[in-house]
Image 1 (cartoon, rainbow over the protein chains, first blue to last red):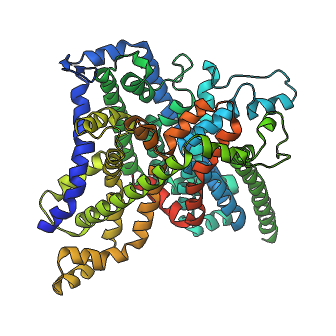
Image 2 (cartoon, helix red, strand yellow):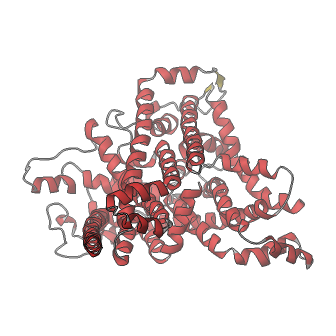
Image 3 (cartoon, chains in turn orange, brown):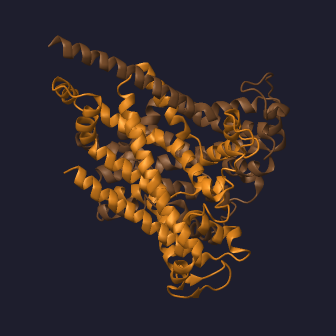
Length: 290
Length: 282
């Protein structure tokens, strides 16, 4: 019994100091007005009331939710189809494809963000250069610099980085399907698409639930990529909750005075969204597991 | 009977070829940015814009520049040792703790376990403010040690979770037998259990190495002295300083990605097992 506590103690101490207490502290801070120095003043739920009426927060909230839904759909549907295709090609091709598709997933968001900024560069970027070669000679669209194209441009990078992981999970799931099911379907004359629809998809219900929930959670957490590539701009058009609250607390969005209380109230909102994702996962995996 | 089988075989072959072609195209498109990055890093700096896809002359000047002007090696070293120490701490904490949750009995075990797990999905942005304040009150702001503590405590629950799953798969008899021989819990753990846990340990280490090496938000916020910074925040600021010098920028990106790509290529099997297991379990 003593040994049990002894083994667990070091982890628990660090956890309480740097995770557990900070979470509780966030809730406290969200009810305060504080620059980080001097006394914090308790203002009840005013921060949340202010957040609800702040047009930047409204936008950021909708964008965070929209981003999470979009990445979830794209990073679940594409990898599922790709995984099914990978499962049907000869071994060597399969290895090459899996290695290639997973590669973007292992570099940091800073590396991918900086790299894609060069690709999207309006004057010298590879993307515009390629479009110019197709015959549109004065094409120099500022992909990240215009409010209309910034979000789709960011989504492309997120999907580029996220497809590999989900694809591998689906691929592992497909490998686990009883080959007899496919053979039986073939004997019954089912074509490729019918087998995908009636054998592969139903067999992957549980895996799909996991991938959906995982992508949803990661979607709500979005920060690094947007911070690196656009910093929330232009004109707050790519501002998500994470980048906005970070700016309020540590950066430029607050002007000169850090607004730790107001920023913390947004942290609470982010936590709430992530909790929703977890509950969604629990529900989904219970249903999928019958 | 033979006609449908033949047509099916033809169809299967067509599908294999079609799929292969499409997938290889997707693969090329996926890897293209990396190829472009490496090619840019070995170009002459005046041939970046408007030059051909493959550089006409190869030069490593950009690497010399990034090493000379940015203190790159110092930051590289910071990333390397901080990642290594973090991996060590996380490994020690998570094996001990995971083993206790899997095989030992003590009051409130489940409560503690659930408390640890409940926070797994908490994003960094939601914690950065209180963590920053906590470090400040300990006098650990701008301290690499403080940052390592934050990394270790944030990562330990997840690794503990992986290790626990691993230890649970070991038979109870193994532990009982060693106890009957009079070994204390710590020596059972160190001499019997830990050596059997190598695959689990490899998974945890690879996962941890990658996530610590790539971490940006905490490092960028907690450390201020330039000499103390690991690579990611430095790369971020290079983006501003070298915004027109793409060869130097690409050289920096390439250098920073080399360790993770090496780990990925050489330990691909464990790596993918770890990443997918990690993803599925969380």
